Image (cartoon, rainbow, N blue to C red; front, side):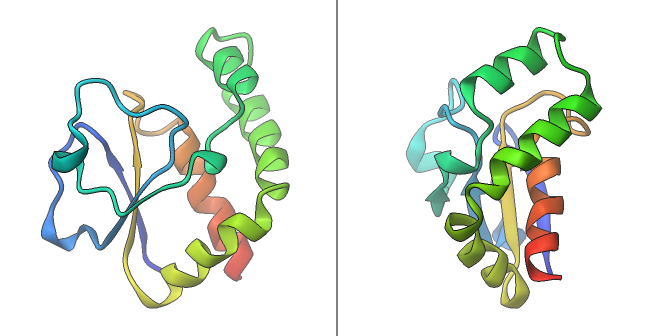
Length: 117
């Protein structure tokens, strides 16, 4: 499985492979033609309520992760093709969060690994 994570504000690279935006909202200030996004899976993003609770610090990382994984389970069939693609090709999950360690793409990467493992 080859999945990497990359901020939307970092320049696309030839070795990114299949680029998937995993945020519900398009990143501010990024032109769609310059982003080189192959697929935008809004359903893979946390619900608005969960996202807002996490960003307002009403939820810690552990609670956010747990609740987001529960939401992802409801999207299992939507996400299965992406997990399968990652078995054969490099996939880059693109996100806009400033925090590269605590964000939805980190959790989604782990979830996709569970789907194929």
